[in-house]
Length: 313
Image (tube, rainbow, N blue to C red):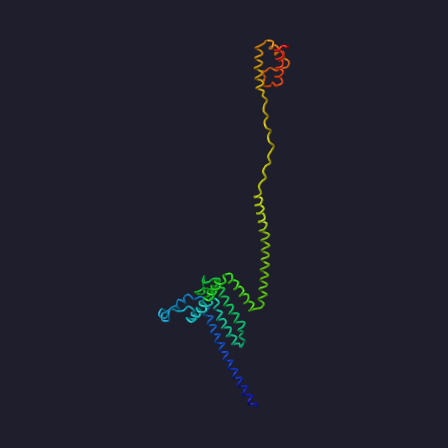
């Protein structure tokens, strides 16, 4: 019985050691493949232009012309870099070798793979990063590949989203995706988002207060100036009307008629002349100064003349 138990235990130990060895070998192979792919992608960021011109030629042409790859991982590394960067995810294509390296390390160290957290987090970052760069830059200003910063996948996907939901909808989708990815990676990211939101709200409130204190008084002053310009000035009050000129008394006409009557009486009768002389010495001013005679003096003189010429009945 004892021999049977020891033999079964030895068989289980041999089987466990064989499975562990196979797992370790697989993990080590994945680690090496991942490192080679990561190096190929990294070097392709700097040598993609020369390597892609060589990749467009056949092997015989490259050998005949003596074209050598500038990628330190050779033509295989140049082709792998073009596949993962230019034709796939652009700058974030290096995360694919990173995921392979992570899996290999966990297998070698006999740790759980955690596909549901680590690998999925890197995958979400790769997709969102490629979409973001494709949305922001499209095929402009590319320094790392021939297609663009986001690669062929990011450029095509962002163009499709822009067609269906527009630029603003695509922007909202990307921001929401990054927030959800951060929460998925670390639950404390929710607190960070809340703190950032509070800081933004506080700063926006301060900016609004500053603008209110600086801009509103100027706007009010400008409004008051405009209102003052619109108000018409009051018309000046009319002054007192000048008195109408009084017509001058008919002195000249009266004096001229009195002169004619005076000359006629002097020539007609000497008694009238003597009476005129006596009367003029007492009550009358000579008509040579007719400008100062009045109508009352003329009446007196006429009454005295009529009394002298006409005898009483």
